Length: 287
Image (cartoon, rainbow, N blue to C red):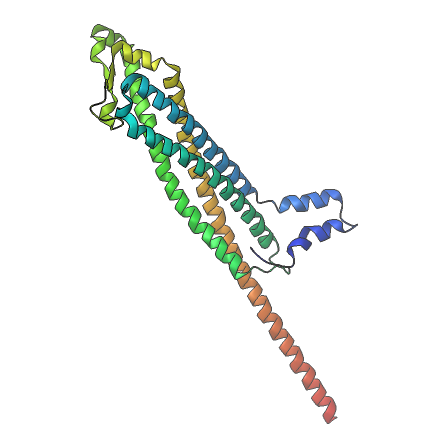
């Protein structure tokens, strides 16, 4: 990515020297680790794992709740089932993509850190390496915006389950005990999850309380919360990556300018030495 002759000699040649102790060699190797990229990678992996794992199980629990309590005729929620299955396949793709993308960004961090560490040595950054770094900046920016949308979308089921849970809690309050419990209902049809002709479509009173006490509801509600938190962690990780990549790209750009300046300076000094040597030869010839 950032081609150069000094990359392998930066640590390997110094560690092979008999004057360098094992402790100093370890310190030099640890100095080349991109800790910021490592932290961002761990945070990204953790966030994506929470979102994909918890989201997949929560979607399965949601289908079970709808089939058992809100839409007992399979034809009424066929489209919803297909959409949920599609979302689960998308979750598989997201997990695979970000596993590879996180490793690539971490590797890019190692290469870029090596380039920055070797600004004043023989290490040369190439135009291709700088273009790839710029491409990662742009791609990470796009992915960050996309994950902001995913984070907002993952908050929707949390809101729906919270409304149902708060309704169940309201039935347990002293005020609700005075009135008829059957007047307290949750109609999921109003959210557009299932069509209006789905039966029964809503749950009231003790039936609603039984739904809130099921393991599927309790598990799905908390898994949606964790999935939403995982999406938020992924957004933070991508923002972290974006700052790192932008800084590394700026360092690489400065490094290329520094090397170009050094090359011009060396050429000018060589030309000056050639002029001086020719002048001395001319003076010697006249004398």
